[in-house]
Image: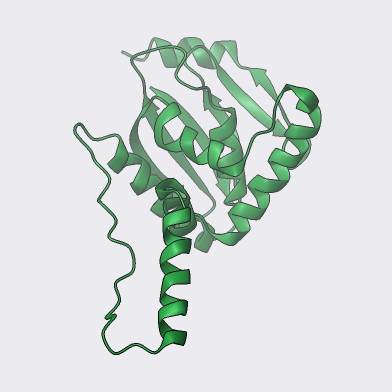
Length: 193
């Protein structure tokens, strides 16, 4: 079982993360389908031309926006969006001509490319928590973007089991970290019966 232990900097942001976590659990259920979105409804009869123009603009905006973008806006708080944009800006500067990532790429990863079952999110105490997940395949999408997502919610990852090693995580900046493998702890964890 993969896990990530983290420190909780702000309880309200932990609660915000719970909402995203519940969404991640939901989209991984067998046969899950997103609800069809109806879009805005209007009573066109009796509208003035100004009201019709405003309604058409609103309908046009809805149709121009992808469903995943609407889900992102509904689920991701502004402070997380700002953090992820800063992370991607730094990452894109490194990539240069190789390509540009957008914030929706992280959301797509959380919904579909992080190929794990979300088994448990638990608050260990007032200041720490753990998220556990399992996977039947490797590679499963990797942990880095999930670690960054936790960090965006002021949940600072401190330790993880990545499927091979238990690693201590030491953050060197908002977006960069070093890991130290803990072989004895890994051995004990893998042989726990």
